[in-house]
Length: 412
Image 1: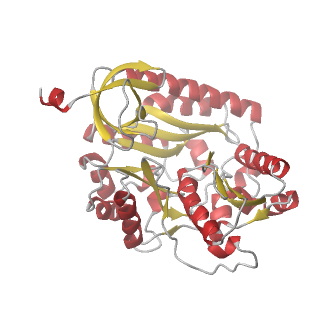
Image 2 (image 1 turned 90 degrees about the horizontal axis):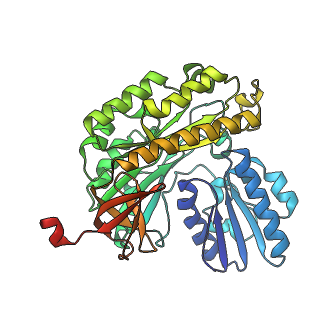
Image 3 (image 1 turned 90 degrees about the vertical axis):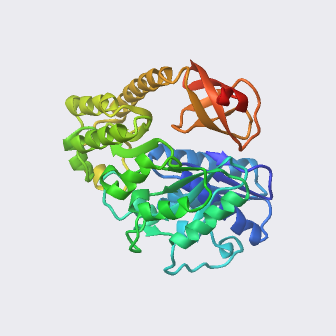
């Protein structure tokens, strides 16, 4: 969850990077409407815990800020419109949350329209650039299609224009994000690889991609990920499970061997690539042997950045009607996956000791991320937003302690 600084319009973003990017458009639309003393919750519904957090935040705001207008938008609001309205909040649909008229009162009609790129604020060292929304797949556990509809992509020209804005204001790393990023262009006859190539024609220094479906990494995108130095060596995959029966019941479009083979190819082509993955623990019907296959996937795929959460049933999805394993078991299995992933990450970070890296310095001047997304803490202040060379001296938990390298040291 992230919130804006003190402002007549306070926007609180929950969940994914796409929400963070879209939150800036929400703030701009509300400001343009001239509203005052307004709190807008840009909610998430990826799990029932995310929805619970949104409900809790809305109740607290209504209780502690009785004079403020409380608005709820985002995926949780889309799925539970009546519940939020009953609390006393005003609900704005996902498709309308970037429109000025949504915050000026009166009815809002949203017709069919192309998706507009969503660019995060200038207060971030990195620019999150939303290029796609919705999903046209039918994974049995996911409520995203209910909340955001089928996949829609922004035009290449519109994305390039937004990227130019980010570069003009000094942001030197751009992260492309979306609900189903790898499907970018399916609705308009282009591809994610073509978009990346268009962005690399700009003077962007670092380009990073958010979660990708493994079955949608074609030859052109694979070549960019492994051969283009401005593409950061960090690939995050939407794996979800490591057992073929679970993947089948999830209606995923890859199998375990596909994921293992893809990562072997990525590593063979560019050894420094760090692998991240989304994993769900405790999916309906998952038994101990199925879970063991997912647990082994962390080592088999060298997953060092795991986005791991217990399965929670989402109303209206097929998985919610399947035999459940129980929330306690799901949470225990998620904890086991997280522990295994933490060990894998720490072992990987130990291999980084003594190496040099290039890091983007965050707003505090002492933290940031290396090209491979390893978290880095500096021993001396550096200018926020700059990209500097550092020497990785030691591991401290899940981050590296680093010393800035002077230009003369590099030359030596």
